[in-house]
Amino acid sequence: MTSSDKEFTGSIPEFYDNYLVPLIFRSYAEDLAARVVDLNPASVLEIAAGSGVVPRALAPRLANSVQYVATDLNQPMLDHAERKHPAAYPIEWRQADALKLPFEDNSFDAAICQFGVMFFPDHGAGYREAYRVLKPGGTFIFSVWDHLRENEFAALATEDPPLFLARTPHGHHDAEKIQAELLQSGFDDVSVDIRADVSRAPSPRHPAIAYCQGTPLRNEIETRNAEQLQAVTDQAEGLIAEKCGAGEVEGKIQALVFAATKA
Image (tube, rainbow, N blue to C red; front, side, top):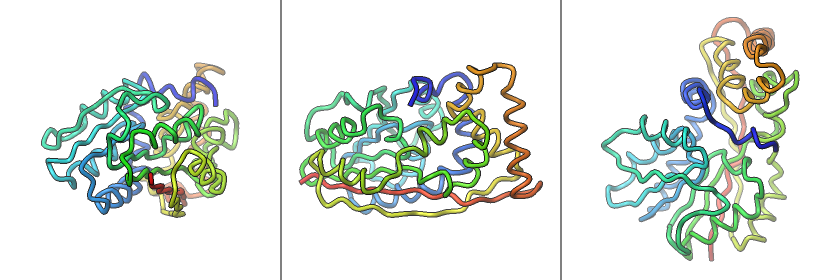
């Protein structure tokens, strides 16, 4: 992972929320929300909340008495999430580094992270922090993307380098390794659920913009040549159209959802 892989700044949060969230994140957010509700927690910490798709899915399903704290490393993403969040469902928003969470030991019943752990510079350190802030008996639930070959639009968008998507969002999918890291961090009762879904968009242009302009792939493209963003987006659109058609398109997406308990 490079330093630019973590930079969700400028116009990226807006593109991310408008294009990428409905394309690949919303259905997994609903699934994560259901898993959390089943735990009946009194307190929830979200790590790497991004543009707020999980808070929008989860907060309305929690009792008003539940403490919900949403954090992210990137203040621009957190600001966007807070602006978009319904005022009727209050959340505490905190800028925080997942490897140095600003919370006391044994503070939360549940810790959640949707598609964020791939961005941790040190995965083990991130897992240990989640373990530390959980109460005994608390649960850590998080999702990671499976290999690029299981995620059609992302694979098509990266047929030509830069390789941000292969390197980071889709670069941490070894289930056995992740389970071992969780156990080494102190967790027990670790489970993994492979969840496939279908990503749908109104046109090939939508996923092309989503990946090329709504993720840090944009940073990598513009670092190579700032004038090539539209050309690379056009190329991704063409590849998606060639494979999936020129009208409404759909492609497979697949993720791994982990749950680990603190003894």
